[in-house]
Image (cartoon, rainbow, N blue to C red):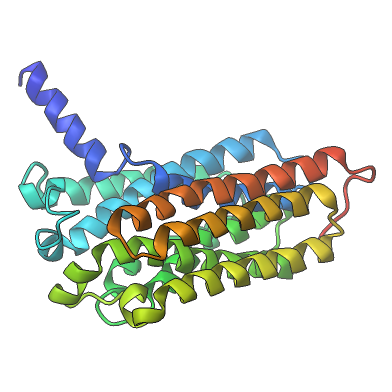
Length: 298
Protein backbone atom coordinates (compact mmCIF):
# COMPACT_ATOMS: atom_id res chain seq x y z
CA UNK A 1 0.00 0.00 0.00
CA UNK A 2 1.56 3.32 -1.05
CA UNK A 3 1.84 6.37 1.20
CA UNK A 4 -0.89 8.28 -0.64
CA UNK A 5 -3.37 5.46 -0.12
CA UNK A 6 -2.43 5.20 3.56
CA UNK A 7 -2.90 8.94 3.96
CA UNK A 8 -6.31 8.83 2.27
CA UNK A 9 -7.38 5.92 4.48
CA UNK A 10 -6.33 7.73 7.67
CA UNK A 11 -8.10 10.87 6.49
CA UNK A 12 -11.29 8.85 5.93
CA UNK A 13 -11.07 7.44 9.47
CA UNK A 14 -10.48 10.95 10.80
CA UNK A 15 -13.60 12.20 9.05
CA UNK A 16 -15.61 9.21 10.24
CA UNK A 17 -14.65 10.02 13.84
CA UNK A 18 -15.24 13.78 13.14
CA UNK A 19 -11.78 14.64 14.44
CA UNK A 20 -11.71 17.25 11.69
CA UNK A 21 -14.80 18.84 13.30
CA UNK A 22 -14.07 19.02 17.05
CA UNK A 23 -17.23 20.93 18.03
CA UNK A 24 -18.93 17.71 19.17
CA UNK A 25 -15.98 16.85 21.42
CA UNK A 26 -16.05 20.34 22.94
CA UNK A 27 -19.81 20.29 23.61
CA UNK A 28 -19.33 16.95 25.35
CA UNK A 29 -16.21 18.09 27.20
CA UNK A 30 -17.37 21.39 28.72
CA UNK A 31 -20.12 20.03 31.02
CA UNK A 32 -17.79 17.20 32.00
CA UNK A 33 -15.15 19.74 33.04
CA UNK A 34 -17.76 21.75 34.95
CA UNK A 35 -18.47 18.62 36.95
CA UNK A 36 -14.79 17.70 37.37
CA UNK A 37 -14.11 21.09 38.99
CA UNK A 38 -17.22 21.24 41.14
CA UNK A 39 -16.93 17.62 42.31
CA UNK A 40 -13.34 18.28 43.45
CA UNK A 41 -14.14 21.68 45.03
CA UNK A 42 -11.80 23.38 42.57
CA UNK A 43 -8.86 21.06 43.15
CA UNK A 44 -9.19 18.19 40.68
CA UNK A 45 -6.87 15.23 40.50
CA UNK A 46 -5.01 15.98 37.27
CA UNK A 47 -4.80 12.33 36.36
CA UNK A 48 -8.59 12.24 36.53
CA UNK A 49 -8.79 15.41 34.43
CA UNK A 50 -6.69 13.95 31.64
CA UNK A 51 -8.53 10.63 31.78
CA UNK A 52 -11.84 12.43 31.29
CA UNK A 53 -10.45 14.55 28.46
CA UNK A 54 -9.06 11.52 26.65
CA UNK A 55 -12.18 9.48 27.43
CA UNK A 56 -14.33 12.25 25.99
CA UNK A 57 -12.37 12.26 22.74
CA UNK A 58 -12.54 8.46 22.49
CA UNK A 59 -16.26 8.15 23.28
CA UNK A 60 -17.27 11.08 21.08
CA UNK A 61 -15.31 9.51 18.23
CA UNK A 62 -16.93 6.12 18.88
CA UNK A 63 -20.35 7.79 19.04
CA UNK A 64 -19.82 9.41 15.63
CA UNK A 65 -18.92 6.05 14.10
CA UNK A 66 -22.00 4.44 15.71
CA UNK A 67 -24.17 7.30 14.46
CA UNK A 68 -22.94 6.91 10.89
CA UNK A 69 -23.44 3.15 10.99
CA UNK A 70 -27.04 3.68 12.12
CA UNK A 71 -27.69 6.47 9.59
CA UNK A 72 -26.00 5.01 6.49
CA UNK A 73 -29.29 4.82 4.58
CA UNK A 74 -30.26 8.38 5.48
CA UNK A 75 -26.97 10.26 5.21
CA UNK A 76 -26.83 9.88 1.44
CA UNK A 77 -30.15 11.75 1.20
CA UNK A 78 -29.01 14.78 3.21
CA UNK A 79 -26.93 17.49 1.57
CA UNK A 80 -24.67 18.01 4.60
CA UNK A 81 -23.91 14.31 5.14
CA UNK A 82 -23.89 12.73 1.69
CA UNK A 83 -20.07 12.73 1.52
CA UNK A 84 -19.46 10.91 4.79
CA UNK A 85 -16.98 7.99 4.45
CA UNK A 86 -19.52 5.21 4.99
CA UNK A 87 -21.83 6.68 2.37
CA UNK A 88 -19.09 7.11 -0.23
CA UNK A 89 -17.60 3.68 0.46
CA UNK A 90 -14.23 5.03 1.63
CA UNK A 91 -14.70 2.99 4.83
CA UNK A 92 -16.56 -0.33 4.93
CA UNK A 93 -19.21 -1.23 7.47
CA UNK A 94 -16.95 -3.95 8.88
CA UNK A 95 -14.08 -1.47 9.32
CA UNK A 96 -16.39 1.02 11.03
CA UNK A 97 -17.65 -1.63 13.46
CA UNK A 98 -14.07 -2.59 14.30
CA UNK A 99 -13.12 1.07 14.81
CA UNK A 100 -16.10 1.74 17.08
CA UNK A 101 -15.22 -1.35 19.12
CA UNK A 102 -11.56 -0.34 19.47
CA UNK A 103 -12.44 3.21 20.55
CA UNK A 104 -15.00 1.99 23.08
CA UNK A 105 -12.58 -0.56 24.52
CA UNK A 106 -9.87 2.09 24.91
CA UNK A 107 -12.31 4.38 26.73
CA UNK A 108 -13.43 1.54 29.00
CA UNK A 109 -9.83 0.73 29.94
CA UNK A 110 -9.45 4.33 31.15
CA UNK A 111 -12.59 4.05 33.28
CA UNK A 112 -11.22 0.96 35.06
CA UNK A 113 -8.95 3.30 37.04
CA UNK A 114 -11.81 5.51 38.25
CA UNK A 115 -13.70 3.26 40.64
CA UNK A 116 -16.63 0.84 40.63
CA UNK A 117 -19.44 3.41 40.48
CA UNK A 118 -17.79 5.21 37.58
CA UNK A 119 -17.45 1.90 35.74
CA UNK A 120 -21.17 1.19 36.22
CA UNK A 121 -22.08 4.67 34.99
CA UNK A 122 -19.78 4.25 31.98
CA UNK A 123 -21.85 1.26 30.86
CA UNK A 124 -24.97 3.42 31.00
CA UNK A 125 -23.14 6.12 29.03
CA UNK A 126 -22.20 3.57 26.38
CA UNK A 127 -25.82 2.41 26.03
CA UNK A 128 -26.95 6.02 25.68
CA UNK A 129 -24.33 6.75 23.00
CA UNK A 130 -25.15 3.58 21.06
CA UNK A 131 -28.93 4.05 21.13
CA UNK A 132 -29.12 7.81 20.50
CA UNK A 133 -28.98 7.54 16.67
CA UNK A 134 -32.12 5.38 16.69
CA UNK A 135 -34.19 7.88 18.69
CA UNK A 136 -34.48 10.02 15.56
CA UNK A 137 -36.73 7.31 14.09
CA UNK A 138 -39.49 7.56 16.69
CA UNK A 139 -38.83 10.19 19.41
CA UNK A 140 -40.15 13.69 18.72
CA UNK A 141 -37.38 15.29 20.79
CA UNK A 142 -34.14 13.32 20.22
CA UNK A 143 -32.21 16.41 21.29
CA UNK A 144 -33.29 15.74 24.89
CA UNK A 145 -31.89 12.21 24.68
CA UNK A 146 -28.70 13.66 23.24
CA UNK A 147 -28.49 15.97 26.26
CA UNK A 148 -28.54 12.97 28.58
CA UNK A 149 -25.91 11.16 26.51
CA UNK A 150 -23.69 14.24 26.22
CA UNK A 151 -24.09 15.06 29.90
CA UNK A 152 -23.41 11.66 31.41
CA UNK A 153 -19.82 12.63 32.06
CA UNK A 154 -21.27 14.79 34.85
CA UNK A 155 -22.35 11.98 37.22
CA UNK A 156 -19.24 10.03 36.18
CA UNK A 157 -17.00 12.92 37.25
CA UNK A 158 -18.69 13.13 40.66
CA UNK A 159 -18.40 9.37 41.04
CA UNK A 160 -14.70 9.46 40.18
CA UNK A 161 -13.90 12.20 42.69
CA UNK A 162 -16.34 11.49 45.52
CA UNK A 163 -17.50 7.90 45.06
CA UNK A 164 -21.12 9.10 44.90
CA UNK A 165 -23.48 11.10 42.71
CA UNK A 166 -25.06 13.92 44.75
CA UNK A 167 -28.25 15.72 43.84
CA UNK A 168 -26.38 18.67 42.36
CA UNK A 169 -24.90 16.36 39.72
CA UNK A 170 -28.37 15.44 38.47
CA UNK A 171 -29.38 19.10 38.40
CA UNK A 172 -26.29 19.79 36.28
CA UNK A 173 -27.32 16.97 33.97
CA UNK A 174 -30.76 18.59 33.70
CA UNK A 175 -29.14 21.90 32.73
CA UNK A 176 -27.14 20.11 30.07
CA UNK A 177 -30.30 18.53 28.64
CA UNK A 178 -31.82 21.98 28.09
CA UNK A 179 -28.55 23.27 26.63
CA UNK A 180 -28.43 20.34 24.19
CA UNK A 181 -32.04 20.95 23.18
CA UNK A 182 -31.08 24.54 22.37
CA UNK A 183 -27.89 23.98 20.41
CA UNK A 184 -28.96 20.80 18.66
CA UNK A 185 -32.24 22.38 17.58
CA UNK A 186 -30.12 25.09 15.95
CA UNK A 187 -28.20 22.28 14.26
CA UNK A 188 -31.42 20.52 13.22
CA UNK A 189 -32.72 23.74 11.67
CA UNK A 190 -29.92 23.40 9.11
CA UNK A 191 -31.19 20.00 7.92
CA UNK A 192 -34.93 20.50 8.45
CA UNK A 193 -36.02 20.27 4.81
CA UNK A 194 -33.99 17.09 4.23
CA UNK A 195 -35.17 15.55 7.52
CA UNK A 196 -38.83 16.14 6.67
CA UNK A 197 -38.32 14.53 3.27
CA UNK A 198 -36.69 11.35 4.62
CA UNK A 199 -38.87 11.05 7.74
CA UNK A 200 -36.34 11.83 10.49
CA UNK A 201 -37.71 13.36 13.69
CA UNK A 202 -36.01 16.39 15.23
CA UNK A 203 -36.86 19.21 17.61
CA UNK A 204 -36.77 21.69 14.72
CA UNK A 205 -39.63 19.78 13.11
CA UNK A 206 -41.52 19.14 16.34
CA UNK A 207 -41.44 22.79 17.43
CA UNK A 208 -42.41 23.94 13.93
CA UNK A 209 -42.68 27.71 13.56
CA UNK A 210 -41.95 28.11 17.29
CA UNK A 211 -38.48 26.58 17.06
CA UNK A 212 -36.65 29.88 17.64
CA UNK A 213 -38.75 30.53 20.74
CA UNK A 214 -38.11 26.98 21.91
CA UNK A 215 -34.35 27.45 21.58
CA UNK A 216 -34.43 30.60 23.68
CA UNK A 217 -36.71 29.00 26.31
CA UNK A 218 -34.31 26.04 26.54
CA UNK A 219 -31.38 28.44 26.97
CA UNK A 220 -33.28 30.27 29.72
CA UNK A 221 -34.09 27.00 31.50
CA UNK A 222 -30.46 25.94 31.34
CA UNK A 223 -29.30 29.24 32.83
CA UNK A 224 -32.02 29.12 35.50
CA UNK A 225 -30.86 25.71 36.69
CA UNK A 226 -27.23 26.83 36.70
CA UNK A 227 -28.19 29.87 38.81
CA UNK A 228 -29.95 27.57 41.27
CA UNK A 229 -26.85 25.37 41.45
CA UNK A 230 -24.69 28.43 42.10
CA UNK A 231 -26.92 29.53 44.95
CA UNK A 232 -26.85 26.07 46.48
CA UNK A 233 -23.07 25.91 46.32
CA UNK A 234 -22.62 29.42 47.65
CA UNK A 235 -20.95 30.76 44.53
CA UNK A 236 -20.36 34.46 44.07
CA UNK A 237 -19.47 37.00 41.43
CA UNK A 238 -17.11 35.06 39.17
CA UNK A 239 -19.48 32.15 38.63
CA UNK A 240 -22.37 34.48 37.85
CA UNK A 241 -20.14 36.54 35.57
CA UNK A 242 -19.60 33.36 33.57
CA UNK A 243 -23.33 32.77 33.39
CA UNK A 244 -23.86 36.41 32.40
CA UNK A 245 -21.37 36.06 29.57
CA UNK A 246 -23.15 32.88 28.46
CA UNK A 247 -26.48 34.75 28.46
CA UNK A 248 -25.01 37.46 26.21
CA UNK A 249 -23.74 34.80 23.81
CA UNK A 250 -27.18 33.19 23.76
CA UNK A 251 -28.67 36.57 22.89
CA UNK A 252 -26.25 36.76 19.99
CA UNK A 253 -27.41 33.32 18.87
CA UNK A 254 -30.95 34.68 18.64
CA UNK A 255 -29.77 37.22 16.08
CA UNK A 256 -28.23 34.37 14.07
CA UNK A 257 -31.23 32.03 14.05
CA UNK A 258 -34.21 34.38 13.95
CA UNK A 259 -34.24 34.44 10.12
CA UNK A 260 -33.92 30.63 10.04
CA UNK A 261 -31.15 30.74 7.45
CA UNK A 262 -28.93 27.66 7.27
CA UNK A 263 -25.63 29.51 7.59
CA UNK A 264 -26.79 31.50 10.61
CA UNK A 265 -28.23 28.46 12.38
CA UNK A 266 -25.05 26.47 11.84
CA UNK A 267 -22.91 29.36 13.07
CA UNK A 268 -25.03 29.60 16.23
CA UNK A 269 -24.61 25.87 16.83
CA UNK A 270 -20.82 26.10 16.50
CA UNK A 271 -20.73 29.18 18.72
CA UNK A 272 -22.08 27.16 21.67
CA UNK A 273 -18.49 26.11 22.29
CA UNK A 274 -18.00 29.59 23.76
CA UNK A 275 -21.06 29.20 25.98
CA UNK A 276 -19.56 26.11 27.58
CA UNK A 277 -16.16 27.77 27.77
CA UNK A 278 -17.23 30.93 29.59
CA UNK A 279 -19.26 28.94 32.13
CA UNK A 280 -16.20 26.78 32.78
CA UNK A 281 -14.03 29.89 33.13
CA UNK A 282 -16.47 31.26 35.70
CA UNK A 283 -16.35 28.03 37.71
CA UNK A 284 -12.53 27.92 37.66
CA UNK A 285 -12.26 31.60 38.63
CA UNK A 286 -14.80 31.12 41.42
CA UNK A 287 -12.80 28.36 43.06
CA UNK A 288 -9.49 30.12 42.44
CA UNK A 289 -10.60 33.27 44.23
CA UNK A 290 -12.86 32.02 47.00
CA UNK A 291 -11.57 32.83 50.47
CA UNK A 292 -12.99 29.61 51.89
CA UNK A 293 -11.99 26.51 49.94
CA UNK A 294 -13.13 22.94 50.20
CA UNK A 295 -16.85 23.57 50.61
CA UNK A 296 -18.47 20.24 49.84
CA UNK A 297 -21.62 19.81 47.80
CA UNK A 298 -24.50 17.78 49.11
